[in-house]
Length: 151
Length: 376
Image 1 (tube, each protein chain N blue to C red):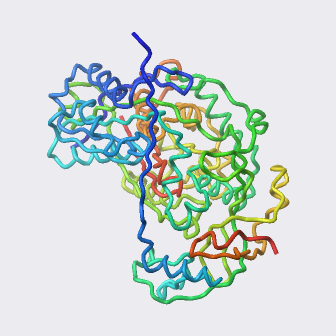
Image 2 (cartoon, one colour; image 1 turned 135 degrees about the vertical axis):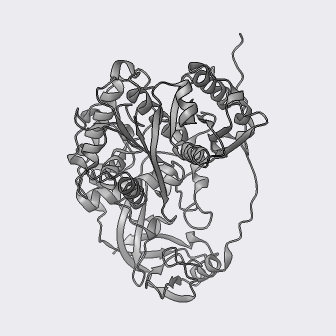
Image 3 (tube, rainbow over the protein chains, first blue to last red; image 1 turned 90 degrees about the horizontal axis):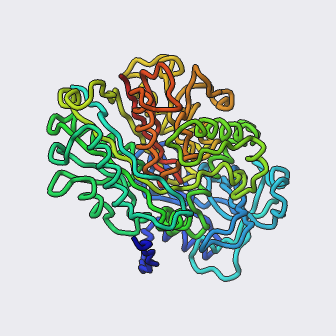
């Protein structure tokens, strides 16, 4: 029997994702260097990014709050492998509890030396204070914040 | 009315080194035909077919358009779940428990037609997590990092879990990778995403697993000693990684509580003989121990796999990672142990088994966990 074929393929499908009113307002805020969250008046959680409903209390959320551009690093990872379609390594991502929020917010971590993986626990620490570094040109994207850097 | 597993079938498993690959639905046919032939059943005897496949990884929308007939479901009651295959088993079980049907085939196949890590970037929302370069490994790494930090877990403890799982694989004739990985091998391997090292991350292999399940009277006609599905449970957590607990598997804890309460399991370590757990990373295996109440919070490293507590006799995901088909593989391994048909790695006293299914795609956000409890 001859060797079975392997046929190359690729999906290129264009989407225009509706961001919805909550994420839209959040992204608009980023243009103005404002980070909006939303508060659940039932459980008092402050969610960033904002969302229409509290998944725990199952109530609609309408109490908008502006949280700070500073926060506390809660968890982090550092990518050392080149993955197809993703940035060149190394790069770090952290979950950050922004001041004024109760839930954590994911973003890149910058201005940290990631060259030696074995040193990561000394360089990045849970509880470290961080601050957002903004792009000069902002267009209503999560990437309007370039990254968070340790204070 | 009881529902039991009466037969299992596997296709061959292979990795990327094999060029002469079959399609995922050809593997579904092979695994299902083997499971049916084993007990002398044909597709006409089957009422219900449930598959587990994920369209994105199969590279075809509605991927069960192909598996539907490959598993024997031509002009029959057939459906698909894009979840870990333990959920396909659970859906089939519920259909039989409803009293409307008597026999079901459950199947899942994994192909190697795509780079899973690359494709997994589409799991995440297009507004926040996707632009931040998330893939399923980074989701798992965030949980592992959180767990390590919360309980001050050294990576050697995680490496010991890899060693234990691969030692089991070395004895399991059906494990795909049979080479034992030592603690030292793990620690010497490179970081892929800190804190996950290369040898902590299971590599996807291709293959298919099928089960045949039946209601009590029919089951006994085809198998003298069916393995009964004693109970099932599954729970889903929220999506956002930042809005839930990352160092504890709450959804699995809830599923375990539901099963333990219903089946009067007071001490799971004593009351259950085998555990097949979804070691997507060794840190997750420690978290699974804690969610299943095998040990206290943060003490997952204390659990030692031995004759009195048998964990992942199959060799775990690290040895045979069939992505969404992994759950059915683990159920099939427990079935063979409990049926005294495991071969080289057969253990004594395998009366009751707990299988943990982790929905690998939703698992990037540690979302859905399921439990299947089997008994003789």
